[in-house]
Length: 569
Image (cartoon, rainbow, N blue to C red; front, side, top):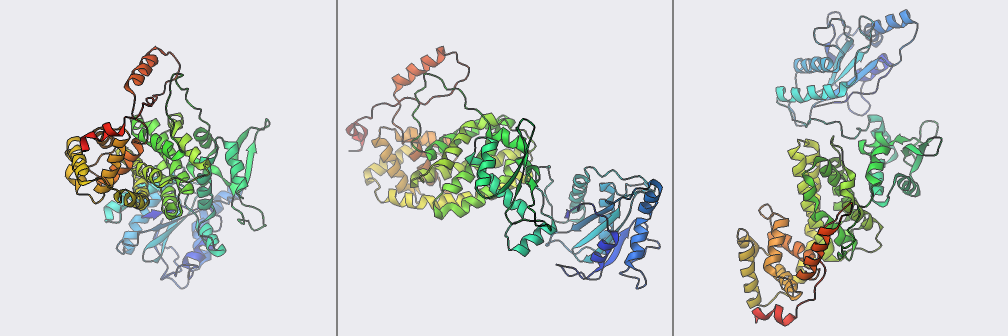
């Protein structure tokens, strides 16, 4: 059940004319009052042919007129309007049930507090089987104004309880991080102009898409302006940026002037302070003796960054930062993805935007590595090769699962649901990207003898999942990946153990497919040189710098192919 409180108005009679009229978009059937502040003597134009809208409006407005005459100041925001709608699959409620629902909602809102005989005047009009409209005039019988601050959240809580009591569809409780719902006027305007989205939703998508391309707020606004979006910055006397508003091209008011939307009204995470916190982070200091092999492409770099995401989920502020940065990475990946995956990834990015917001403050510095990888992808001019793209999508799938579990553990119902919906689209994109990779690998699978030896490695490294891996249709392709890795000096047994430790296999439908992308990504680097690694660790122990990174081991000479494949002959 949804109760959507509308902006305050001033025309009581005009709203009554709409509620009792034929309807502008939905047909109004049998309009009549089902509840009100004092049903005795209430003029109801839907039941009494002699009653008029003017009479009913005057009846509701009497406290307003008295206050205006007493204070000599006309109130122009006294009309409170709240449509209350049941879900399409809910049963039809009776007039008596709707009357009880209306009473509970005005009590929760503060319009007519329980036991208060001096509350505001209100009525509930029903003109369809699935919803009512509550109209109130917000001047109490004692001339005071009601306390309506936070009424939307109280009404939402009342609706959740009503759903339980009446056996209706259960909606999830809000946490004040959802975006602003489009008004009917905005939806009708979009329909009239042939737009698929309202201006607010359109701007939200465009700003989220621009975030991976900017390293500070000024760059972000410049990028948006270059993309054709109208930007109105708010600056202090020193020229410092204090705020901004954005406008959609062609979204004009009745005077033909551009309509601007403040960032915080477009979405809660798009205020200037929150954008600055996300964008303006600094790189951690690197250990001077580190000699890490950098990924050859931004796609590999992003996959490496995702590999450590689960390590940052133990601290809530770090977890929130990583989930926010994960959404940016999904968006950047969608923008640079091959054509066959772009639509699914764009849908995943839009859906995951809800999972990026929660009441927990993000320590954005913790996600610097992931955000840097995202910007590199956004700025790259070349697309990924098939295996690198498949590995990144597989990593995004696992990271999204981790994000959904974290939200579930924190009882973030809306965010967890958004992550699960995004996961569906990521799975589809990942499966599609892996098909050509598997086909190419399976076409050059190792000999039967080599495959049997590799199967032995699988049973020794991951005994709990060996049967599922070896019966997976993608096993021949995985055998090729393991053989290639061994030719490069790696040990298949160790690679399998590491891959299984990084990505749980008991929840995977096709474990061989997951291991393919995991091991292909890991084995692209040369085998570690143990002596060089030991020397680097000794150097690290004596370093007294202010910040430390965990450098990857230096490269070692590749063992001759004869030694690597000797046991297979």
